[in-house]
Image (cartoon, rainbow, N blue to C red; front, side):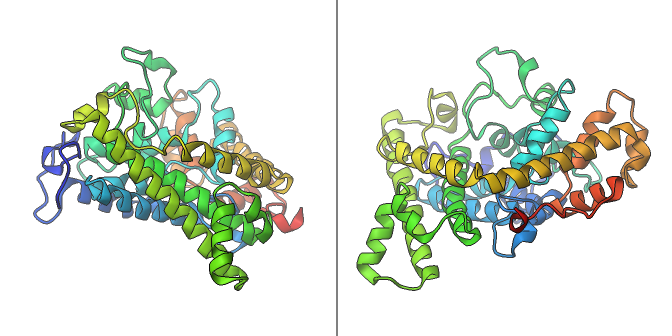
Amino acid sequence: MHRAVFASHPDCSRGRLIEEAPSATRSPFQRDRDRIIHSTAFRRMKFKTQVFIAHEGDHYRTRLTHSLEVAQIARSIARVLELDEDLAEALALAHDLGHPPFGHAGERALDLAMNGEGGFDHNAQSLRIVTYLERRYAAFDGLNLSWEVLEGIAKHNGPLLARNGDRAALPHAFRTYSAMHDLELHTHASAEAQVAAIADDIAYITHDVDDALRAGFLFLDDLQDLPLCDTAFEEVISLHGRIENSRLIHETLRRVMTRMIEDVVHESKRRLAAVAPHSVADIRTHDDHVVAFSGALGPVAAALKAALFKHVYRHERIMAVMGEAEHIVRGLYLGYCDDNEAIPEPNRTAIKALSSERRPRHICDFVAGMTDRFAILEHGRLFGGAPGASLSFSNM
């Protein structure tokens, strides 16, 4: 594989916290990708909400299918930019590992419940999972991923600190892990991590429109009023006429996705040419992202996100279901804190063996690791009532 001089190179990796013999058949980044795919947290994403509760229908995106779509887009962009595709893919697959049940609703509930205990942040939880919570290997906790993957998980959205900034304000996992393994939180991440971040935006923008149409939160003619979608919709109609709805939607959204990807590639090439980096270190110390939307498309993509917030994420039916989801997650956390005996084994024994100061974080870990359906069943077991009966858009 040819790589640009500013790409991350597996042969020049900064290594792992716990030294391991190299693989005879895989690069460090390929090995990291494989460890992520085989992790327990990765499998759990199959039953974690993206936007629409999984039991509402088999065709809605989950955190797992979303992550796979992000990985495909990330590899495509990384290939054209001559970056390390395996690193970009590994970061795309890992970026949502830390999401609790019910996605951002669960995150809000846990952050509120953990007020005074360090809060909760899904990106920080992703780092905590791969450095501590996965218990699969004999020689270490976590997955012992390479420095470049850990850096990308932490910083794919940009620096977390100013140089010499106060680490006390960081989310718990970033603060505690960086104290023993410096991820240089004041710098940008690699170009591969930046690719994974923007691939996330491209994926969720397009597939959330698709899922919203399937769920009846948007209608076909609404595509003509959505930024980016409007011109793509008109192009499909002009080429094919009023074809069946499923084909019309797909043809529209694949054009939206293609336009965003091509814009990112063109703009990123322009920025890289202007910066002229000679190494990945030059990417990290540059004062801005080198992978981004153009000045023309960026505001349009932002307007489409805003339209999704207005018509989908903040829709009264979504908000009602997410409110109930927050109630379930917060209730589980507080219930387990009040009565450690209510925690299922083997977690009960492990948590009770901890000091009282450490228990809240580990109870939070347990709740955050739940799938949607397990959280619903546990809440029903602890508090009675029909488990998750109100968690349905059809009941609104």
